Image (cartoon, rainbow, N blue to C red; front, side):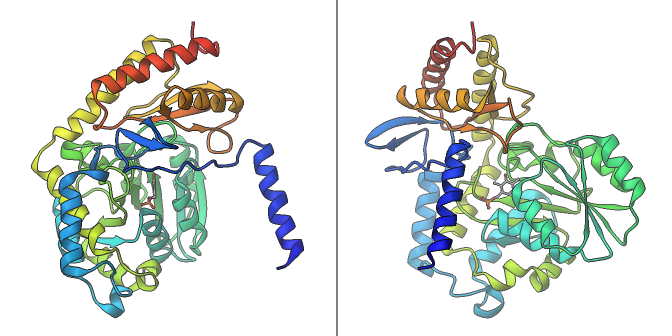
Length: 393
Ligand SMILES: *Cc1c(COP(=O)(O)O)cnc(C)c1O
């Protein structure tokens, strides 16, 4: 063992702890759901991205079990070598119909989808123009590209326009999150598309928090704004509303054909597993069949946000079920989170650098799986602790 190296890692860990940036990871003894078991106690789950409660939905579980019986548990290797399973094709076709695009391609995760697409489609002659609050996987995808990078101010169309006017390139790629995960605001996609048309730019949106949430039947941000055909590249994940694990890109047949040849995480990392594929296929079918879960999600979010505001909490400018409860200093937010946990609610605090200093928060993730009783229980606890810590009056 290299002792200098070990010592340096330990110093860095100690520093994280001092700065309040050390992640404490809880262990769950139950499936993801409205309530989860942690350390032998039931806690109301306000942290997961399981928007529609599909992570432990019996139909998805059964679909996964049937797939394991028929196809086993592993994909064997990358698809270019070991072949594509029927399930990959089936999911990609279903997803293309659902998203109303020509074609889709699956990846091991949404993170990998961004790492695949951005460096593959851009090179030294191109420029990537990225929203300053984009997800880490977009940032890393940009780092892997040889293209120049320009960052525009968050959702600021004047800032985007001035970058578009300044830069010269073979292609200008505008890339944005669809829904921003820390604030719950939605990217101004119609304006982005309009600017892209004026400046001959390519548009890419990462719809991780929009799929299963926005648009009719949860088709996502493109459907929400009725921009079918106007967005070149959509990135998605199965790990949020769809309840499983995996990622996808959606777009033209040509884009997908290109990425099958050039997307490095597609070429060099093994494919999504049979149970994940089968469960995700069922998730897409459930959404196609009816809009009930999406409606329940929005009803729950509206109720919770309305009552939190009425109680005097600052929930920022959210436009989606993501509910930031902005509390101020990091210590306050982490104290709030600890008190919630003691009172039976699992909701993590988030501080700098994930969000700006002085805007530390509890990010509440509302789900269709929460019942009205669950929301009432949570509202009571938030009010109780809010009074206790002088957040509300
Ligand atoms: C969660 C998220 C991802 C990562 O998705 P995984 O499938 O969990 O890797 C990518 N982009 C955005 C915007 C996300 O919110």
